[in-house]
Length: 92
Image (cartoon, rainbow, N blue to C red; front, side, top):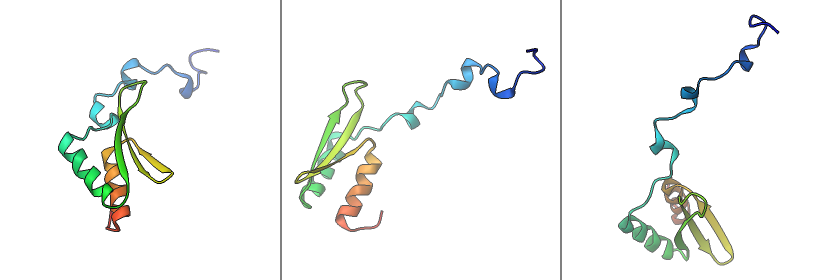
């Protein structure tokens, strides 16, 4: 196969095309201690417990909201806040 016959999808992609300079978008955000305690208190008023658990593989935090035998796992603080809004019955 000559270079003129090669399909566009088969061409090599430069290494720089795969790198992202915006790591804050890709990585989960951390809640500081005060924000976490506030969320825990608000969840506790509704019968939930909120835990921050660090994943073994990469050390990123996940947030576990538990009530009775049901646990929901969130990887981003915004997701925790959205679920809290649902639990409290307010708009997201």
